[in-house]
Length: 237
Image (tube, rainbow, N blue to C red; front, side, top):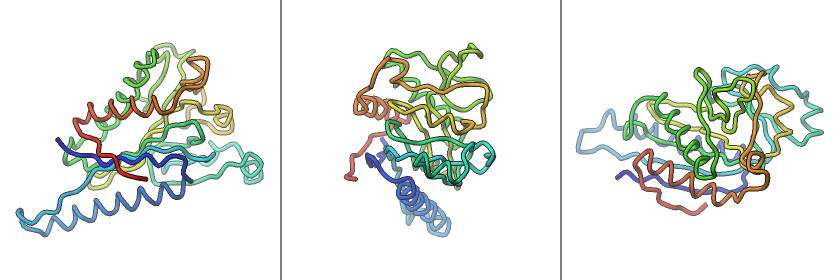
């Protein structure tokens, strides 16, 4: 069974987490490139990494996103205490903040399956399974990445988890943002994921009160380990 090196970074500045992701991602890609010129018996193994964290208030804009989906100017961002980062993942604009579980898998898909769509669907399934453990039925909407509640009712559909990744040489980075105890008011200053006609929600809103984040993390770890058929190896922050 393949090992995945797991770290719970706790609350961490977005720029610091992004730098760590890039270090792990670029290191894995570099090993794969080096292996192309190595003999079969001299191949260096790559490692998979899984990071959990929470960020201070921040908006991030993916490569395919539109700047006008950010509804605040620089002064508005300062007043709200929110940072803004254009970044190198797919997708449009989203929000990260306290009470949101952010998951970054830096996986070498050559050791799992070389299919980005399957990778995203597997991440979605881990969130769906986690929600099920808390008594919440969730699903997907055709053509829209993410995990949704009331997915089959366009008038009530609302997103509880957003996704955006980058991949190169079948190595992934970035990941998912799962609204657990998130202050949803911050989504009011963007067009979340570029989708103007559907709302967002959180586990706390659906259950009517705050949720134990540690319980959510533990369930998410179980779901990811099971779905990817891996063993998580705990590492210090």
